[in-house]
Amino acid sequence: MDPSSEFVDLAAEVLGILSDPTRIRIVLALRQTDELPVNALAEIVGKKPSGVSQHLARLRMARMVTTRQEGTRVLYRLADEHALAVVTEAIKQAEHAVAGGQIPPHHHGPSS
Image (cartoon, rainbow, N blue to C red; front, side):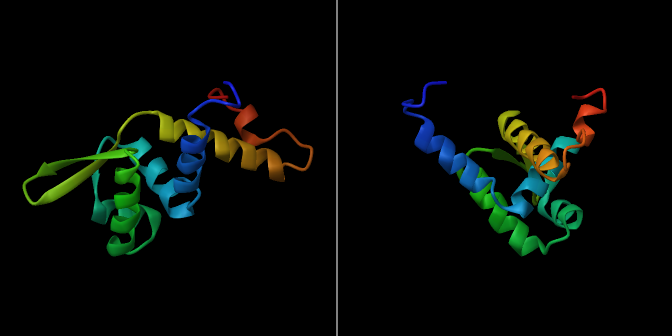
């Protein structure tokens, strides 16, 4: 990647959107299942549905999640694998930051 790329500013926006712990938890929750409604996501991330709905709106505006109507329910899913990849790499970096010179957990498992 070129530091002068036209996408650097957009990449900073992506990182900004994913800088919220609740949004990270939403991305991780959606990784575990194909689609979820707001109430299920709220339960998984431990937040009120109204707050989760606001976070989902930000993720949707950034085209990181998409929706599908099923009756009266709106189901959310990850738009593609890229938001998950960013979140996963950020968590790995966080593990390194607190590892204190030890080998972080992601280097021990088969999914390294």
